[in-house]
Amino acid sequence: GFGMGASRPPPPPPANPAPSLPPAFPFPPSDSSCPAPPHSPPMPPAAPPQWSADAAGLPVLRLADVLKEPELGSPDLPTVGSAGHRVGRCKPCAFVWKEGGCSNGTDCPFCHLCGPSERRNRKKERKAQWQKVSVLDRGMQARHMSSMWGGA
Image 1 (cartoon, rainbow, N blue to C red):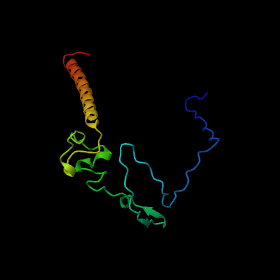
Image 2 (cartoon, one colour):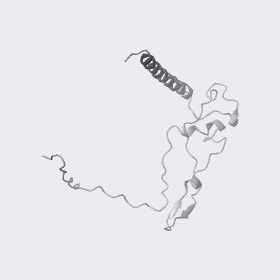
Image 3 (cartoon, helix red, strand yellow):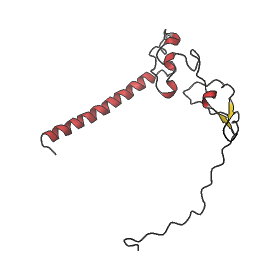
Image 4 (cartoon, rainbow, N blue to C red):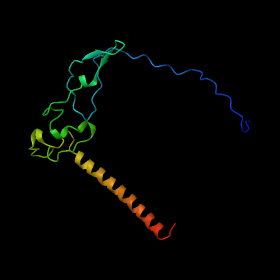
């Protein structure tokens, strides 16, 4: 066995070392693109990319040159309130899915991209979070009171 102060021999090298990663491919991607998530409307075709070269002379694609903000009133940005939809920072419009619809047009400060049940789902999530906080708060109060009165 190995006693105190004794060191273990190093482990043997792996039988099949992990393959190394292929070198970066410095050319523009093919026409295939990633599909949009199922809840998002399809993105319009992007403008042709602007290529530049890095220090090694390899082409560099700048993301800001390829991605453009959708136009207000377009299917990708129907209202000003829809701007944060893709990152989950929007508030669903209460009227867009009602019979009369929303009368604010593109100036509506709420999201018109969220589905008809999104408001209800978010309300349930908020309620569950508040209930969790309430339970934790009651537990902390009970422990505090117990410690004040000499309980264990």
